[in-house]
Image 1 (cartoon, rainbow, N blue to C red):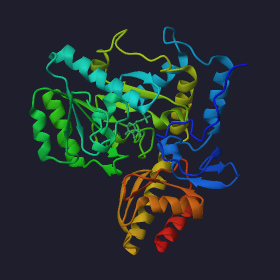
Image 2 (image 1 turned 180 degrees about the vertical axis):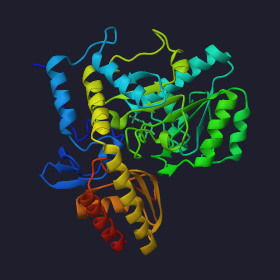
Image 3 (image 1 turned 135 degrees about the vertical axis):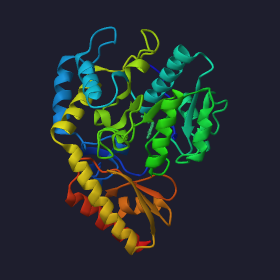
Length: 396
Ligand SMILES: Cc1ncc(COP(=O)(O)O)c(C=O)c1O
């Protein structure tokens, strides 16, 4: 008989998250159900991941079909669903080639490696520095936390990976230092998500994109939170009139099935040859089937129009609440990536919403409430959220 350990009170799961006292067991569309069969309106979408709502039928069907056929196949062989998703991403973006991985951090890791490899091949080893911006969030792996310009994320993990320099976000003056010769790429979110839902200024982006072009610096956008329709267009960069060289994606791409991707322009992608980068699970048949079904559904069912319309409606109503209540300092974001800057603690709003109104919402920093409804949300659901949110304001 094999020996088992004495039962202890220690949680067998590492304590890397402060979890709310709620166990979700089922989801359909914009709603989730807990283990007591209580229903919640989910305006978090698994943090911008279940963009088509929970268990979307079209994606589920395609994934179920794939599960009947083949679960995994190494990247030593052709994978039709991988090719199909790559074609869809290329056809609908300014990029030419795609690398697949399994998460956002991995997508940014690939982007960082790609930028270094490209720069070394084209400019020599001196040109290795990547510039990122204050308040950013790019992931938790060693390279991506070094790219994340937030002390609290980096604390305790020294020595940090070298090769990153940080500039203030939305600061035009600071861009002049990009003229330094060893910068090979910039990496930025067009709406900073975790950092407080802060959109990039159009003029700042124009100047940044122009400088990148002039200095042959790669413009890399982290669309892990903003991509796959979250801001009302398939990619947020499309609203800024720029053409990034590299785009990183994850979260919403698989409707909840883990997947990450990096889309790059041909000249940049060419820096990766066989052996430069890889991933056992990256581009897996099940994950890429989910991704391909997600993109097909978004485009064919015109989900982007709904996201745009619902985003405009939500913003308009929140602006009215801002006029009415001094508890709201600001409403910001794009499409259905919405930040409400509140006077008190954002977490108090989140707790009240869950406990009293069966509504799930998020924070993005101490005083920003973050709202991430599914792109398929309806006016009725938005109204339900607004009613609850106004009631919470009235109690604070
Ligand atoms: C903009 C951005 N980049 C990167 C990441 C990291 O993604 P993942 O948690 O899938 O590694 C996140 C996750 O929140 C993100 O919002």
